Length: 505
Image 1 (cartoon, helix red, strand yellow):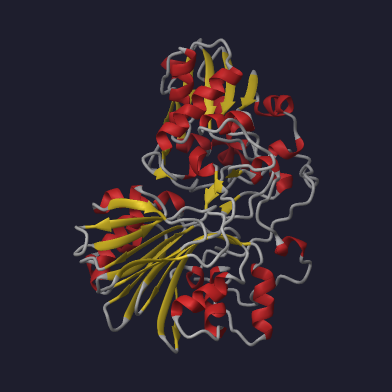
Image 2 (cartoon, helix red, strand yellow; image 1 turned 135 degrees about the vertical axis):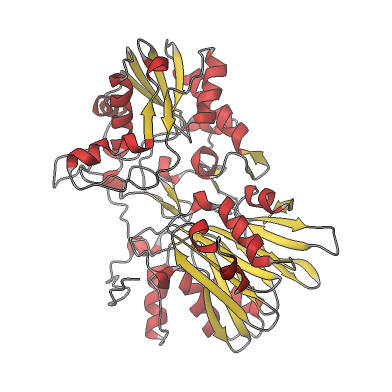
């Protein structure tokens, strides 16, 4: 991940423009910050890893990389863009030989989308080669970075992932696993990582298990290979079987002798990221034993119970709002229809020279299905409201298609706080819900009504009796401001200049 410099100061409006939407900032969604995938003892390991990364493309679209090991040497290919842009050429895969490989999809958080930040990161050590791919955020990365530079460490990137490399390099322990443990005990944050040495493939989750990581197997027990991945959907595409979740605070070590578990941390109350269920994970994944698709339908049903409104049609904001809208429809008895059609061949808005074109940009991604909407009382179901710009344009588009009423229902509580644990969110002052009431937000986006699922309703939909403020089951800091992991960098006011080099690639 890139170093994160967001502030947790109290929310305020956009003082420079007076615009609560932050005019000119068109990125109005939350983003996961990376997917990891690794295989051990698998034929065509790099090709299998490319397939796994393709299934995890939703977790990071800025850059991708694969490092393989052929038993003697490491091989690496990293590039900007999507998995298909980099690994669809057989000649690239041929240059990544071996039955062991490690891959990474990256989403940059600070704009440093340059090749030196693309993972897996690799380094040569006394004990051999070492590659690491990381998902999450270290909340003491700046503090550690400064201390390591003072010790003479030379950083080649501006990602907090490189902190792991330097901590392992200076560790006085002899084995790779012990050096990794030494490094992990110095970092603070939410993370899952997969690392590769000459002797083993290793998977790690942070002590609270905020970020996901799963273990799978390809082939039969004793003769097959092993897989580590961010989500179960990556197992399906490569024909692997799900074995189990890597436990919070666990290190899984895979080598020629099999799979071994190391648990160097004292057991803590786990706090899995609740937003994985709401938005980030693919619907066909299973997270912590719970099918994501089913969870989203139950969230939608609970939202209907809490915030039902007379309407003629339930319409999801595609694609993330679809399962919740289905659950809302089933619970309410109001028909479900695809009133908004998404253009799947558009990524980022590719032309934005004027404010007028920026305003039209949403139509590149979404189109109104007029026969479904015209003359109807419409309930729009979406997963979240961040800055509110997209919601405003969607409401306007539905009204322009002839809708009589437009009611917005959100399958998450209001996002009032920034995330420092591996999800790219704007500064708190840019989050619409941090400084506006629900009624004010409804007025700003132009909806006849607006409602969010309650935090207790979210927990009920996920099979809990409600949120216990003393012992919450999930990490829900973006909704509650209850940060379960310390934030040393946010209390550190030292200069955060990470690099003086301006790189163009």
